[in-house]
Length: 284
Length: 326
Image (tube, rainbow over all chains, first blue to last red; front, side, top):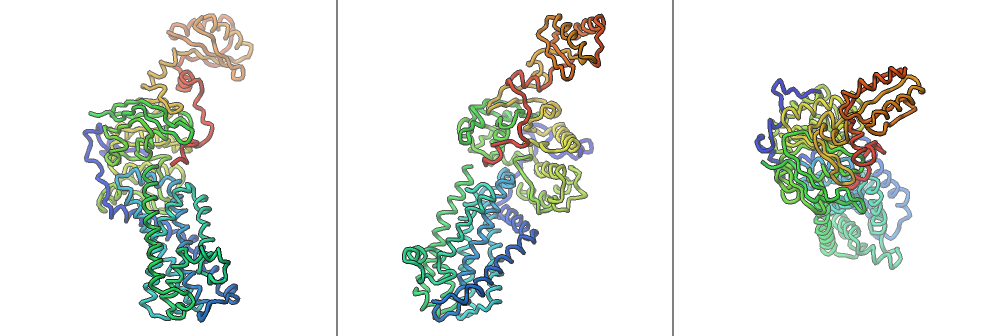
């Protein structure tokens, strides 16, 4: 490998720093975000083993709930279990793809790619935005796959396509908000392994909610938590949107109240974790 | 014209470790500078601070006149970073990596593609440019890594241990590339724990230990500081070694050092050219058979030993705390 200076293929400034050619201007916010996002999406699309494993794992959980536990879970009112739990399952799948975002950012930090990006003349916020945009895209993909499997095992909506689309949109919105939380976790964790470890907090959060089972059979102290945590509001809102009246009876909340609580939680998670994440990245 | 590097009281700690301990340093631009020191000396912390990846706890650092804290973006427009502080994306091709970084430097799609092709040629990766980086060998990856830092128009190239972990062949290829870039006029700042690397590549060497600059100068100056030339000889028989040590001691230039295992002994020899024939005659008279006898300048290893009291021998293949503090 020789740099062929004698052939005029000189790559860099001919002399001293002050007299060299124009400096690198740096990419605009949109270009930089796009390039960073494209890289993360390419990495995902080109790792078929990850996609297959992730999809298989999701499908397996879904089958277990639908056919193993589902039969013996009562208290779902006039809703069949499949119509009750698929909304919750889709909602919690957002958190499980969020774990991928946490380990992804931890890998980038540890591997040095993040340092390379940060040494370039682009604003930090565009690097983070690119990352979040990519993670949100992957989330939409995962939501679509999960919904598809849900329909395959018998889930049907009662309130039409418009309401179902709104439910899907809500999932994307709150997934976007939680992305910031997971990226923050990935930053704090420092290594992909640690990020994965911390992400396992997703399990209690998912299970102690109305996602898979009605909250009404839990002990009182647990209900106090389960009733007010974001996943319950999200699951209930998606249920109310997709199943209408049958769900209203069971959930015991109005669509408006539940939707408002979901949106407030999303806004809250975003408002806390987006600035924290940016702050943490800036001060390293 | 600003100095390339102006550090004053530069300090950075990680927990209890003082990675940079009130480091003062001024380096004029227009040369290849090597930062030499053992693992954990603070080299990577320093280069990462220059690259605006780390904020100093106290003190100031100006790169080409720009403050690393308040004018970070101005510095990022000037630099290209490669080595252990940077990386490439394994799941993309070499060309894609180059185009991505070129775009981030602010180039148009067309210019980015042209520059990517030019750099692939430059680092001799054109043939594998469209293969995923995960299929590359270690040496190819390092070359791509160096290439990525060249896809913009860097005026200052920062190379953080560019050859650590490379086989000798890939290492000398990378050396050639760095030397050519230096000859072409790019300012280069590199860190290394290898004395021969600093000696080969750099016109100016800064020796760092425990977060401080302990010596700086041209390789020649540093060697002079470690003392005079030395006469070193290697005897064929062990019995001859004892006699040889007596002969060297009789020069009265200092205490000879002696290694029985390799049958070698050496002694300081100021004005060595005059002393050498004296030694050769004395050895001949005493009928000591020597395998070889040399008059040489002290090695940088001896310089380092003289300056710090310990050698540069790396204790571990990677730099210890510096890697996981980001």
